[in-house]
Length: 176
Image (cartoon, one colour):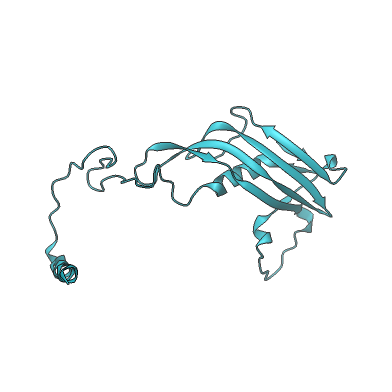
């Protein structure tokens, strides 16, 4: 979906759009859309810049980082980004980035690609660690058993004699 900036005659435009199934490709095999994203946003012309602020609502399916099980995750990010024509971009030697610069993009011509913005905001809304639940126990590193659903099938681990001094120190510290 593109927004034609010629529609910004009054310096502001409000848009609501619900994507059809299959209309938006997240371009990431690890993230599957479970519900068509709904996006509501307001565009404002601020001189040569365009400010877009709004909200996205969707649900995605991802894999848990610990147990690799697929689970659904609601995603509802708010966003506030600025765009400028790419023509104003001038290569400079050293530039100190401000917080606003991290929410800045560029457009060519008289259109802004909202699909790219939606994809970016969905990815940015993901938590650093994707967990199916907070107390996920993950997989056994030896036999691969999902410790959330079954006991480990590994034989008891033999401990390495090289660690004996540390085990003794740990026992003494716990005994104090």
